[in-house]
Structure formats: structure tokens, C-alpha cells
Image (cartoon, rainbow, N blue to C red; front, side, top):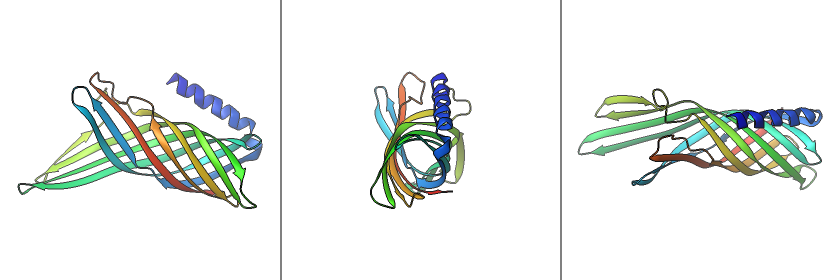
Length: 206
């Protein structure tokens, strides 16, 4: 946690130094995520969630074509399934709400008078505000909160983020990338939980 705070402090200092050439933008996008549990003596199990995000970015010039972007976004992950076995219907709904803070170095190359290609890389800090599973069997529903009364599951995640972006007229931006979870989110001895996923989005300068 101390390392994350120190990283955030350094990012803010760098952005403040380059604030004279800063740009603020809003963005929305699609960010599916896979949660992988590697359980001792059992094996690996994957759960794939659909995810959608909305937020903003403050992108400041550091030197030349090198910039540093500090973002803040809300992300909603979800998965719904319905199965019928021996005449008994089972429904499951998983949902998670997170707050993400990407801290991304980005470097751009002009492709023409109105088009710019950029690559970005850096850490993204994520904190889960809530997470729950709703299981309904033959109409009887049970809700489980992922984090309440469960000290083994961590709300805090840290990603390594990499991707590319295409900017039109210095204002409209299309981007895609990949998040690789770096932390084990399950503190128990017999399970390792990590996350990963691709993402894509659209942004607009304001």
C-alpha cells in the first residue's frame, strides 16, 4: 500500500510539472475481465465477466512527445447464467463495482496533420467498492457478499497496463490495451487469485 501511495505522489508531482500543456478528456469503454483461481491440488478455474467503464483523464506533457496521464474511472463487472437440470432452474448473477486509477506514460507520433498514434504503459490501481453473487435455485435466492466477513479476499488490485491509442484532431481518441493483474487477491494458503483482460474505449477532450 505504501508503494502505491508513493507511486501516486510521484505521478502527481510529474503531472504538476507539466501542467502547462495538459489536456482533460472523458472516456467510456468495454473492459471484460477474467478471474483465475489456482487452487492447490485441484487446478485452475476461470470466471469471465463483462465490464464497462466511464471516467476521465488528465494528460500532462513531461518532455517532448512524452506525457503522463492520471485517470479516474468507475467500472462495473457482471456475469449472468441460467441452467436447467432435471427440471430445476438455477440462475446466477455476479456483479462487481470498482474504482480504477490508471497512471500511464504515453508517447505519441504524428501520422499526419490530424492523426496521432500513441503507445501507453504503466500501473493501474483498482479498488473494489462492492462485489456479490446472487444464486437462485428453484426460485430460492441467496446473496453472498465477496468482501464482507471474508478477510482472505482483497479489495485492492494492481495491474500492469499496456496499449495503443489513435487520436483524431487532437480531441477524439480510440484506444485498446491489456491489463495484467499483479497481485494475489486471495490471501488463503491454498488459492491464488489473479485477474487479466483486454479493454477498448473512446475518449473526447474537453
